[in-house]
Image (cartoon, rainbow, N blue to C red; front, top):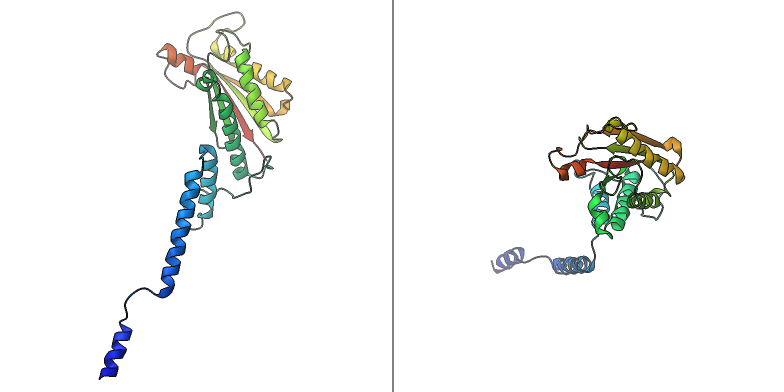
Length: 238
């Protein structure tokens, strides 16, 4: 009878297995290690987005709803290798342009950069682009164009589309009978400048939308200034 009670007590032995203590210590140390790494890191939003995309790709087989981006080693001049690689290049290019424009408060207010499905888009607003009723590039505008060119000139496969936009204030001059002609002339001036910088003319295009694609309603002077803009789209192709 006593033997049966002793066996029963051994079967009801409480507590975690002995290996769990070592395992728990190891997990705690790993957690502390990564917390320390994070606390000492300086997070760059653009690079964080790239890292997050790579992490999402690693989980794409588990969570099907997550977008997939190929995990590739980051190099200074990565070769183009499909849409995923192009998105990585676009994120880096947009980050470099932002860094330059943020050094000048005037340019930071006038220039916006975004990553598109095919590459990057650079939107430049008045008053850094052109004088009223003119299609001649201003010096500030050429500085921005130089920044864009320096960022993308090492990428061999690219197509650049320049869009000209105006507000809805009518214009009627012998040179520009309407805002269509003015916006087209402004886009063409940018294209000619890029061609002079060595861009393959077969990769360049210009289009003028006049007043018909406003960003905001033309109800105030501030809104009209936002609508007077040049948009440059750099599409990275295979």
